[in-house]
Image 1 (cartoon, rainbow, N blue to C red):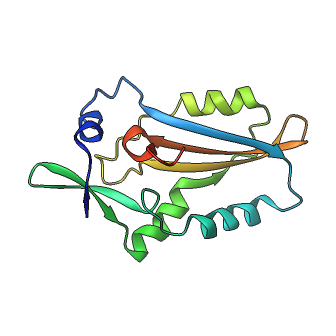
Image 2: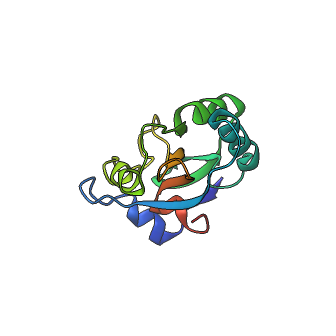
Image 3: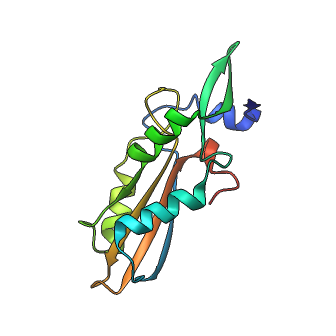
Length: 142
């Protein structure tokens, strides 16, 4: 386990009405690959690296990052990596990110990092990846 820094720990106690999710977008020429294959490649590249493969646990009143076990990792991929084919413009993608509930991670059923693939933006000429995460997980990722 790895302790959160005092600053990151502070952000966990912020009000739910203050969304402190950090969305990062990468827009690129649409690849010649099916969306499901693209997500599979994302999963392979993510591996179980730090901050993408961890959860928050509370121990003696302090939060720590703890690596997900195999079962938790499979559930994480199923619930937090998705294809958003119905979103076709950059504005719609940004609106989607802004409407999401804060991902604090204090609730054990909730991930603090999510990833989405938008396979057909801007008249089908481009695609995008969005990583969305709580401030405490985004340091060094975005």
